[in-house]
Image 1 (cartoon, rainbow, N blue to C red):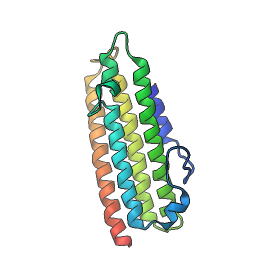
Image 2 (image 1 turned 90 degrees about the vertical axis):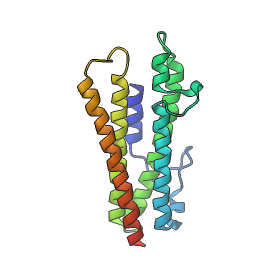
Image 3 (image 1 turned 90 degrees about the horizontal axis):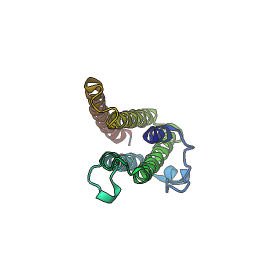
Length: 183
């Protein structure tokens, strides 16, 4: 539900260069950046996404801001307002990262004429969307009402997350290698 909204919102393509209130770089800033700097920014954005996933999965965060696990352990009655607030913050982080990744992809595909690098960035974005949707589904299946319903499906989803993370690592490695060759 709310996490599904997070998956949907982060998957919605934004207008490249739309800075909005998220601090994403303007299109002009991307034009002046070297390919190496663009690739480095993609890696920084991936680190931000990883931090958002940790927050969503209730890892290494203060007790006052815990995500899904904190919500489940708060009930009944559940502390839904705190959970909703955390999901909203994480959704904003995912959406901001996605907008910026799409802006870098557009810069690589267009003015930089680096279709291979742009395709790596597009693949990375697709994998992150898959990962977010899968994590959201896992969280929904972990609710007390659904716990123990289908352990095989839970295992398959966990394996899908692991395989998606491995694919993300491979794409990042390919991006770095091909960017070095492009310069």
